[in-house]
Length: 394
Image 1 (spheres, one colour):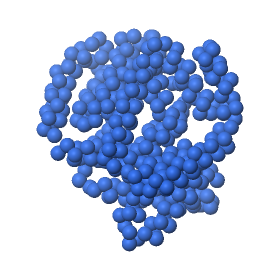
Image 2 (cartoon, rainbow, N blue to C red):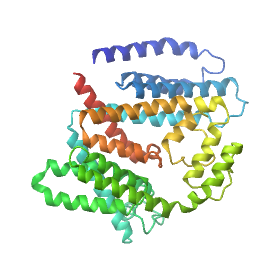
Image 3 (cartoon, rainbow, N blue to C red):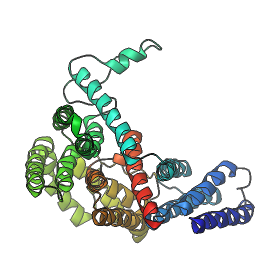
C-alpha cells in the first residue's frame, strides 16, 4: 500500500512538471484548462489501481484522448471521424467507472452488504417490469406527482423495467443471479422465501429473452461447477438449448443474410452501409470492414467514440473496443478479463466468478458497458474483486 501511495505521489508531481510545457504549445494555453485537469486525474487514478491491465488500459485511452485534442488544435482542417469531445466523453465515462471500482475496493462493507443492495435493485426492477406487463407504469405514475410526463414508451410484452429494453434488463438480472443463489446459502432459515424469490427472478429472466439471459444460464453452470456437477451440466444444456431457440427466433433473417454479406466483406472489404438488415452480424461486419482498412486502424483503432455507421453502440464490447482503440486496446481488455477469470477460479470465489463470467459473455452480444445501470453494476463486481486481491496481498 505504501508503494502504491508513493507511485501516486510521483505521478502527481510529474504531471505538475509536464503540463506547463504542454500548455505552451501553440493554440493550447486558453483551450486546455479543463481537459488537462481531467486527464491529470485519469493518470492519478490509473496509477493507484493494483491491476496492471486496467491501469494500462486507462493510460492508453488517456494517450488516445490527448492525441485527438492536440491533433484538432494543430491540424483542425484535416477530416477525422472522431472529435476530441467524443474522446473526452469516453474517457470521462471510463474514469467515472474506475472511481466506482476504487471506491468499492476501499470500502469496509462486507461483500454480502453490496450483494444485498444489488438484490434490492433487481427486485424493484422486477416489480416495475411485471407492473408494466399488466398495463401499469409505477415509475411514470410516481413522477406524474412532481412533473408533467408524456405517454410511456415501454413495450407491452417483454419485460423492460426502467432500463430501456429487454436486453439491458436481461443483463442486469443475469449478472445478479449468482447473488440470489448465494443468498440461499447465507440465510438457510429463510430458505423457502428465498427459493420463491429465486424462482420469480428466473421466470422474469426467461421472459426477457436477450444475450444476458443466455449468459446467465451459462453462468449458472459456472456457479455450480465446484458445488454440484449435475446442476452445472443441466444449466449448460438448458443454456445451449435456449441459445439455439433464441438465436433462430430473434435473428433468423440476420443469419440468412449473413453469408452474402460475409462474402462481400472477404472479397471486397466492403459491407453495404444501407443494408435493410442491420442486425448484430451486420453491425459487426460493418465495423470489421473499417478495422481492416489500414494497419493503423487495425492496431490502434479509429479513436475513442469514433462513428462506425450508426448512432448506437455495436452490441459487442470486444469489437467496439477493437474498432475504437485498436488491437492494442483489445489486448489490454482481454488481458484484464482472462487474468481476472483465472484469479477468481483459483480463489474458488464462485459467486464473483459466475457474475463476472456472465458479464464477459453478455458483452459479446450486448453493450453492457455503454449503459450506466449495467456498467455501474459491473464496476461494483470489479471493485469487490479488486478488494479481494488487496486483502490477499496484506
